[in-house]
Length: 177
Image (tube, rainbow, N blue to C red):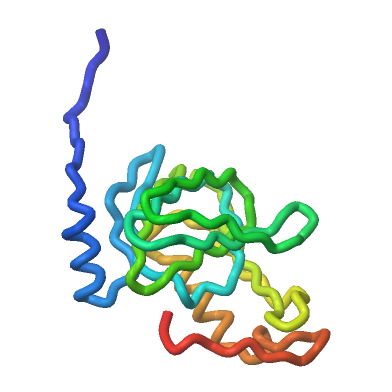
């Protein structure tokens, strides 16, 4: 046999967590974080414009509402994977992706936990001509540091980062993150 430490198998109340996120205005609720995986529920990503590249796979289940997962092919072409409510998508590691869903939609996301040296990258492209605008990168060693929010703040607080060097279009900042 083998020695087993305590068994923690949380029973997750999706409805209760979705209600909590809606009532508090929060966007995410972490369900677990182990050495191997992490999981969270996310509410509304209508404001997303960047393409996130992380070293992990992602499993995304549409609990409520639909997900439009914008992604870029190896050739740099933007495409959209539609994930209707009740459906699940497996996304391989290192795919530039931008999950977008309505404020009243919810996703259940599972990822491999980051390991030492893993780098998350965030890329923005001009909404007018698709020219590269800016990159933010982070070594994620503490999920509580919230690298997505940090990347967004850095990008949107700089008009220079948001201004296309090719066509001069300025990407507008969202009302809220």
